[in-house]
Length: 329
Image (cartoon, rainbow, N blue to C red; front, side, top):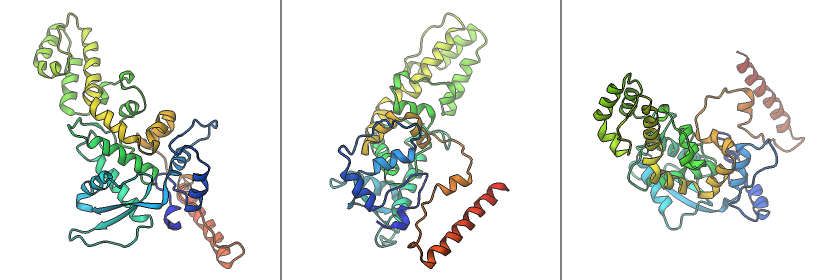
């Protein structure tokens, strides 16, 4: 495994080098199990590094990827009988003519592939909603299992986090969906939002009953079409419909997505460390600081006492001064 690539962190994900893998794997009795830490200082990087100990750097699963048909290539690789999530990923990109873009994958192509894969999922028809607040679109296929598997693989193999789902979808992943509370703001479809807003703004019982008749087809599908005896009944109606829209109609898709996330023990870790993994799935604005940038790299100096090491120490000092100057502007 190439040292240069494995020591670069993407989205705070670090893959240990081969020696760390070998030493740690020997000491782990149950590779898929993630235990609750007694320390309050545990981080997402710690948890992912623990999960990454499962990866066997001596074995590879090959992905032949054409950029124009990235998902098709990923599907074929994931569904191949010989594929194992614990194998190191080796990616070979090909152009439209089928020619290879490079030779051996030492980490760079894999990370690029995982980045493109997460970007594809974020903008695919499997999810709907604004850029960084995606929920399930309830498609009738089994792509959700593969989507969950791809997310788990990206996290553990050093790729970017799939941090584009809504908070309510994340809660459905790590908790019993029946107990997850949804609100009007969680509905991402504009037409459905307009319908619910119309009902919420009804100012009289007569107006409310007219709206119920107007939207009777959709309400019937959701099992929410019923006579209302007072204006206050609209609150319960809205809650029932929103819960159906967010959770009820997407249950089959949600179940398969969670099954895929069980790959490499990721879902189990999410359920134990709900708050820590939230940053990996739910997009949040974060201020980039000097510490943020410094934390993305591990420094590997030349042998102690060598001329190279002396020069490198000076360079690192200048680098950190530069970051502080940028932060101070």
